[in-house]
Amino acid sequence: MTGGVLRVVLGDQLSPGIAALDGLDPAQDTVLLMEVLEECTTVPHHPQKIALILSAMRHFSRALAARGVRVDHIRLDDPANTGSFSGEVLRAARRHRPAAIVVTEPGEWRVAQDIAGWEAATGVPVEMREDTRFLCTHTRFAGWAAGRRSLRMEFFYREMRRDHGLLLDADGVPAGGEWNFDADNRKPLPKGVAPPGPPAFPPDAITQEVLDLVAARFPDHFGTLAGFNWPVTGQDARTALQCFIRDRLPLFGDYQDAMARGQPTLFHALISTSLNCGLLDPLEACRAAETAFHAGQAPLNAVEGFIRQILGWREYVRGIYWLKMPAYRDTNALGAVRSLPDFYWGAPTGMACMTAAVGQTRDLAYAHHIQRLMVTGNFALLAGIAPGAINDWYLAVYADAYEWVELPNTHGMAIHADGGMMASKPYAASGAYINRMSDYCGACAHDVKDAVGERACPFNFLYWDFIARHAERFENNPRMAMPVRGLRNMLPEKVKAMRDRARAFLDAVAPLV
Ligand code: FAD
Ligand code: DLZ
Ligand code: SF4
Image 1 (cartoon, rainbow, N blue to C red):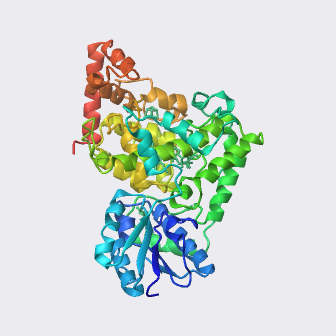
Image 2: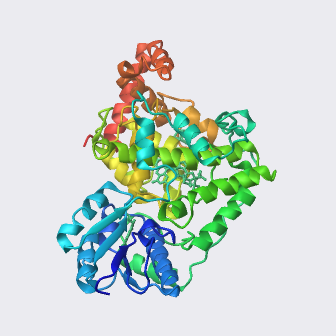
Image 3: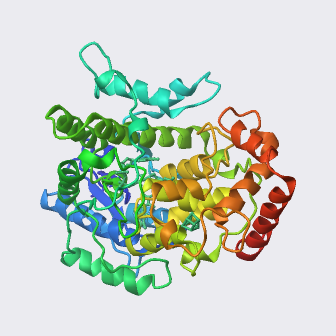
């Protein structure tokens, strides 16, 4: 193709409208997709995540080729595969001798650094284009953040609602007169309510070939492949969205924070994998929910809650990531230095909540937000697990994990390592919260009402130990002052007993790094 453009599409850029394909000339240009070992092993990604990306890449290439586009798709098992993006771009530049290389900005800082070296390595000019699939540009986010003493999602979200005209009446007033109906979205799941499951996406021949490849190549990665059920095409992703809007959106809001035994997905959408690799458009998902509201098919608390997650939280965490990297990843405001307990990798534990969250993570590469935040995240926060270790875990085990979205959620929201840059208070909670929002405690070896006895719930003594460790830091935080006062009003012997339990427990399961 000498003289044409080499258009690079990464594994999370599988959208027909991706910026790198703008202006594509099928007579001259070649689209490059690269299955590379490095991307599968920077952390030991869950086999379902690897299979999802590779299968979606292969389906994407097939669809492009069917449109008459020349595609150079490097397979993971190609003997000449160098195993890295830069190695494969160099080889492709030698093969095709393009006049230019065009790529869409990547989702991860690490990969942006890699792309910065392509021009020197190949001697071909490289154009990196903005990723237009997001609803807030970097410039827009930086402009919003400039001059603010603290960044809060809620205010950003209102601006995004205005920018995109979602759930607003003709005068710009938010539907229902409020911006946020979160207070209505905190119900535990009542007995007898059975959420309809997501639709089935049985593996086709392409996916089956990839599942076999992944099983053979990554046998040691945490997670099972059996039951793989992720959409791998844009069409399947839209089916998943439509089924969610029809079957689960109406109760999504009510039970958004609930957790229940044997109910790994509840009323959640399961669309983050599709949104994040480009199979589904975020604005399309928001508009579909808004349409359901106007048609009277879903209540406002559900629709507003769903739109807030995508238009608010998803864009907000991306904005924070690109505004604050690379220093963001190295912050450790709470001085957390413990190692990650083996039960995050499936070792047995008596804690029923942890067993459920980790077990479904192994089987599905999925846990919903409250499990990630208030079970595995809360434990890591209270225990003081080193940020690098817990971040790597979240990046590895979820099928929707990419650093731009994983890091702020873990580092900022769950473990408060950024010292409150992203969230006003740490989401620290004792066992009482888990007991209120789930039925896990009824099946647990520990007693959720006990904080010092033999069967004491670890979340209880770890919670008070956490408050004691950081009392000075949090005593003037209006949202944390109450537990600090509570601790100071406790009998010193009780505090000592809980802190002794905490230390002994942590030294056993999470020794200092
Ligand atoms: P739903 O609950 O149905 O929500 C709908 C959509 O809203 C999601 O698909 C997602 O795109 C978006 N959304 C909801 N909450 C968030 C959020 N906090 N940040 C960004 N988008 C959000 N999400 C990821 O996509 N990738 C990650 O790597 C990731 N890591 C996380 C780590 C921690 C510690 C925590 C607390 C949260 C993390 N999240 C992550 C956010 C959230 O848990 C997932 O987006 C959600 O569970 C995906 O499942 P769902 O599609 O069923 O979501
Ligand atoms: C996550 C992932 C995996 C497992 N494999 C590949 C791959 O083989 N080829 C590819 O282009 N992308 C892969 N990805 C997604 C990349 O890690 C992602 O594109 C970058 O991290 C930028 O966000
Ligand atoms: Fe989790 Fe404690 Fe409840 Fe057990 S008792 S399920 S450890 S919160």
